Image (cartoon, rainbow, N blue to C red; front, side, top):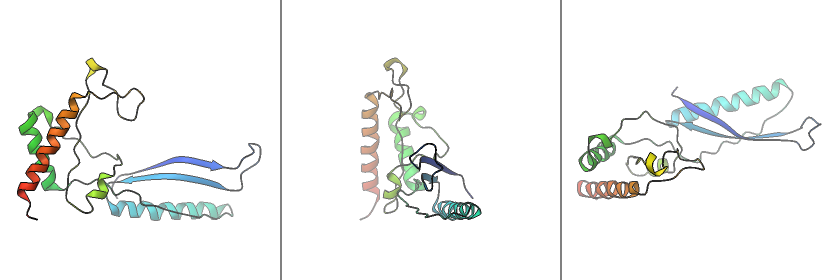
Length: 165
């Protein structure tokens, strides 16, 4: 089985703090690199919860909603965007990073059309643009917006010229 991330993001149980809650609700998020691993996580999570509840005389109402597909870059699209980045911005503009579990809507798009998810760095210490995304102090260096726009326009044009409709 490939790597998976299971995050328990919300737990609700009872109102009075002095009484053991009769019911509890957990809301979780699962991220995987492929659908097969997601299937395994769903099956094993359900089995674990049902057996744990049964051990204590309880029951489980298990709901699993698949909200977003994993982001998996298609090889030809990845090679195209990498080539464009190298040609447009130089060798230093391209990095080879390990897969991440970041959740993006983009995974849904690639269920219907080939594509590659590419990121554009915004780090610039002199402009206090050195905090990661999803932090209160995150500040984008707006020069990176031009780089991103150029990358995606070049990709779109290259894609349109190579694909037969």
